[in-house]
Image (tube, rainbow, N blue to C red; front, side):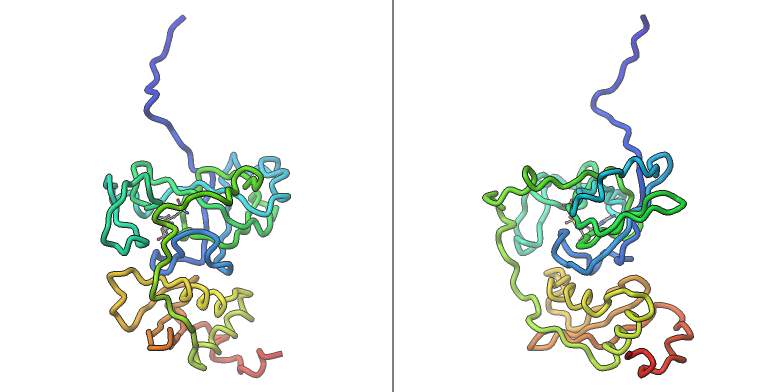
Amino acid sequence: MSSEKTDNKKSYIQHIGIISSCFPEKFGIPRQPGLVAHSSAVIDLYPPFNRAEMVSGLGEFSHIWVQFLFHQAAGDGWRSTVRPPRLGGQKRCGVFACRTPHRPNHIGLSAVRLLDIELGRNGPRLHLGGVDFLDKTPVLDIKPYLPYSDAIPDAAAGFAAITESGAPEQIRFTDAAAEFCHRYQLRYQRPLQNLIGELLTADPRPRSQKRKKEFGMRLWDVNIRWRMEEWGALVIAVDFWEEKPAWLDQTALSDNKE
Ligand code: SAM
């Protein structure tokens, strides 16, 4: 009998699907799942993993674990120690003691809310909430979250137990920014204003940028600008990245306020 030699130290992992999320760029993404309830994403499964039977029973779980590839960090390599934001960006810890995307296999793990499973012509589409995924993130595996085993209420959180300071206490919107969010929500059923409020409350600013006054981030197809004030954050402008769609000019605000 011939024997094949396998290298036990290497494995082949397939992408089983792809994430479309509200975060087209890294700036603004929460540092962990569950912190920003209105953040959302969908997973579309690739053939042959898109058979409805492969998700049979999953819809009975409120939360799932998603293993994914930090595809936008993969090209940057990794270091054996990193400076996590919770340690003020000054002190270092081991790569295996933190959740940085820059790790040897660039694999991420998030427990997220499973809102719905839609069965379409191209297979199941999983609708998720409370996510920390970049748009176009490759999915490696999906498993149900098991509270009886996965939830550990007396777990010690190491340096992650430290709370970060300096997050804005209040979030306000200019009238124009609030009006845009209102129209956008009516048009696309996307909770833009709530999402911006939650993201700014979670404070996406890296420590190195805390002295800056004005910031910008992108969500879906819109650009958001905000300014730090003594009392908190003022959202000064929300607009499309590219061309304004006709409905924005043509629809009077009063038409939308039923
Ligand atoms: N919960 C996951 C974990 O613990 O493995 C991710 C934690 S990691 C600290 C979260 C950050 O990874 C996000 O704030 C975002 O900046 C970054 N990120 C998310 N998806 C990514 C991707 N596909 N490629 C590179 N970075 C990504």
